[in-house]
Length: 374
Image (cartoon, rainbow, N blue to C red):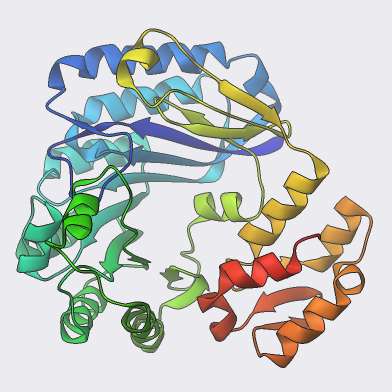
């Protein structure tokens, strides 16, 4: 059976964070029932196509999936299992925020089959958390991790952010120290991106907030790579670090160009070489709109995506697979560009893979542009 990753969007949150541009909505408790009913209907509509697949990963993202009653999550997984088999080692992740987890919810998650939790901590600095609009304190974040461990979860990931307005190297170093001291197996460390339409964008535009410059942001990234490496977290993607065997299989599907089905509002999919998405607006999703903007990927699209996504990983771009899929050897068709990038110390080729060096990863967008077809 063909492998498939399943993403399920839960668009509800307790409060919209200042930096968030995702499709998430606060104060919509009255629509929870209608939303999960619509989600079940969408799953059922996929019953026939899904017979050819086996789910290797399931990811509940948001929003804040841990905000809603746990029964919604358990019911969604039961519905999914009725449509396609989940592999015996299926990775089932649920995103959670401190302050929304309880021992009862965690027990229900475990019984339902959730085996990986991704906790949105962002920072262990109280002032920075308030500026971001987060609803938890550093202490509550640490307690949430311990609560998850007590409930029997061994695969726990933390989301951290750097490049925040007002953040200095000392604050970032302290956050990293708090993170590695906790019993977690995975850490995602992302640089803040100020997206238009967010409260943070307005703060920066008006001068009420100032983000660190690029040099400081790069220093923060290097600090994360060094400190997390010392603590036993292996960097396997630009922003992701894991202990042995704990890399996120769901996200690796994206980076390696695998097929995935997105369910729920704003969810994106890649199946049968076509991309499509559900509407981000909750009302349109509840009204039954699905699979918008379906686009077949051209050969050029596939080449560009392979370069963009696979070079994000430390494993790199599989040159043999490239030749098998596209019929040409990249190291020959882009020989001049590859030679130049090697001279600058930005890439290396070894054991059939083109990999970005640490310096290259800091300039990944520019490196990819050099490697793309003219």
